[in-house]
Amino acid sequence: MNTSRRVHGICLKSTPTNVCVRQLNTTISWFVWKGDIFRVPLSTLYRSKGEGGWDLTDLPAKSHVLFLYRKRQVMKQCKITSAWMRTWGLNVKGANPLLRDIIPENLEYLRRFAMYSAYVDEQGFMESKRTYKRRAYNTLCHISRSETGIQDMRISKIWPSTDWNTVWKNIPCNPVPGGTKASWYKVTHDIIPTIVRLHKLRISPTDKCNNCGMHDTLQHRLIECGKGPQICQWTTQKLILFLRTIPTIIPSEWLFTSTMCTVASYATACLHVDTG
Image (cartoon, rainbow, N blue to C red):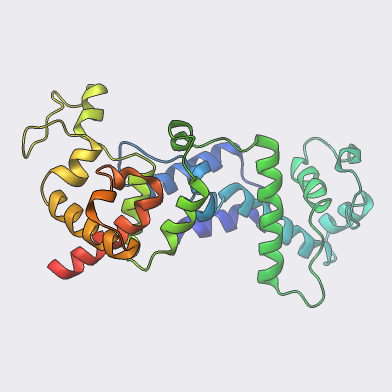
């Protein structure tokens, strides 16, 4: 709530500076990950869930939308700022924002207003405030991604042959608690801090599991240690029922086939409920 108020307060006068955006992003990242060592970049979390993100609000785009909406409201008022904006022709949609050189350099926020206005039409007569802001937000997000380019995610580079569109579509659609979805989101992005990974970074003195002494890999944590074998066996039985097949057809590495992550998450949630 405090972060939201801070963003809104900043955007009433001008767009936030890069330093301010970095500070807010740091706060958001700390809240989301709570000290986790391995993380998914915020640029990835900004993506839709169908694209491997988490539908996290794009802070720069949101701040620009609030700024654009506020300045268009000011334009309708009889104030000195609105008079300046009309003098510079900012009361009409510009065909090319690069022609706004008449605006002084020290008024960078008005140059930004000219640029955004060229791509976002004004609020329609029958259009609600919420719908208008959502439309402007989607437009500015698209512009930002077009400028920076869409980068391939780390996990898609590691497993390029995986049908990631199906994976990202299935994970959020499962009828399981949000905590289960978040856990499998971490598993799918391969950001679980196993001791083997920590040992490679020289954070841990050993790569052995604290419970059984085996190598603490992702596979070990999921299906070999603790309740892993029980969960794996129970899930495999459910998978056999779902697919109407026999156990010999299910490969031992099925759990790490990305298209099966949704079945595993569902089974894990059901096992948690059944065992209490």
